[in-house]
Length: 196
Image (tube, rainbow, N blue to C red; front, side, top):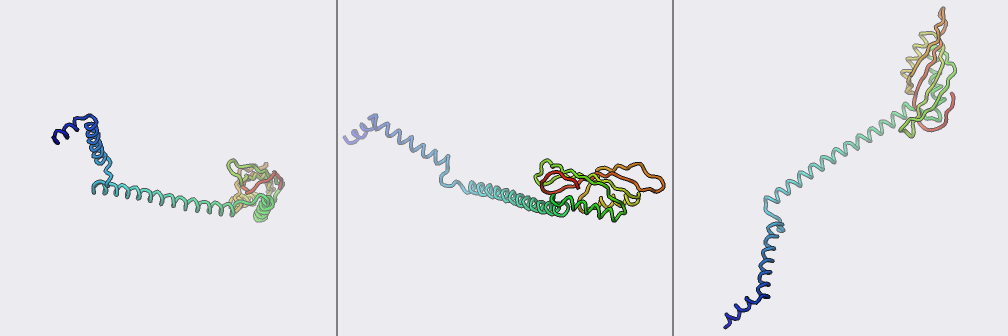
C-alpha cells in the first residue's frame, strides 16, 4: 500500500510540476556553470588572461614613456623659447631707446649718419605678448660705410630684419649716399604707437 501511495503522489499535477521545475532549475544551474565558469576557468584560460593583461600593461607603459618624453620636450622647448625671447626681443617700454641706441652704435661704428627715424607697432595675430616694430630710418654716408652698416644690422643681437632699402640718386664726386631703410623687429609687451 505504501508503494501505491508514493506512486499516487507523483501522479498529482502539483507534485509533477514541482519535480519538473526542480529538474529544469538543476539543468539551468549546470548550463550557467558551463557558460560563465565562475570557478576561475582552466589553467589555459588563466594563462591567456595573464598574457593578455601583461600585453596591455606593456602597451600602457610604452604610452606612458612616450608621454613623459613629450612632456620633457615641451618643457625644454618652453625654456628655450623663453631664453630666446629674453636674449633677442626687447621689452616694449624700453624698445625705443634700446633700438635707437643700437642703431646709433652701429652708425658710429660704420661711419654713417642717422637721419630721421619713425616707428610703428603692430599686433601679431595669435600672440598676446609680442608686437612687430617697423622702423623707417634714413642713413647717409659713403658706400663702404653703408655696406658696413647693413652688415652690422644683419648681425645685430636685437633680431633686426632689413625689409627694404631705397637709395636716392647717387651723388657725383664721392658725395655720400642717402638710403632709406625699413627695418622690422619684435618687442614684448603692449602699448600705443609712438615715434623714436
